[in-house]
Length: 216
Image (cartoon, rainbow, N blue to C red; front, side, top):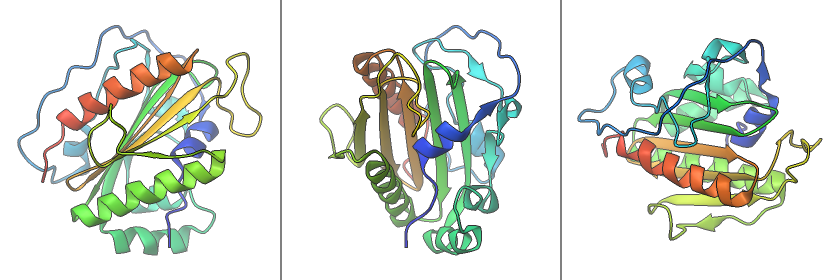
């Protein structure tokens, strides 16, 4: 069984409900020294800024809200939440955190970090998410791409930059990455004005986010 949550689909379904302040800066990784014991500790390890300088979208300005995620929250992304809860518990899912920058109508960067009991669950979850989105976009996954750490998969979607794709709601070329890192699954999405810009943003965000997580 595979999880019904799709990173790309979740991004496409988010709705802004308020305005966002401007945030300027670049990713500033701070290596962690201990495995998070709570979802709040996990959230403290998620990036707060991205290299592109996109404004961070407040968690409550999105529907469903970003931020802390439980098994029930993640299961709600699926068509069959009850089945999804069983799958997630089989994986040893503990909790997760989501964060977004930019706008659903323009450049957008997102980071999903999920924590599991063991590395095997994190790796299987990342693999299934990658497969789900590759099928959604009818794209070809690149396993262990040279410009990302081992254990990552990459997908490039060349959506035109002149308007949102009605099927995916992506507002331009998009690049997705899924990485297993110890007991963590990290999913990053970057939508930009060009594939090159999206790829540059994604690579920097992936490296910065992984640097903040312990290899437990």
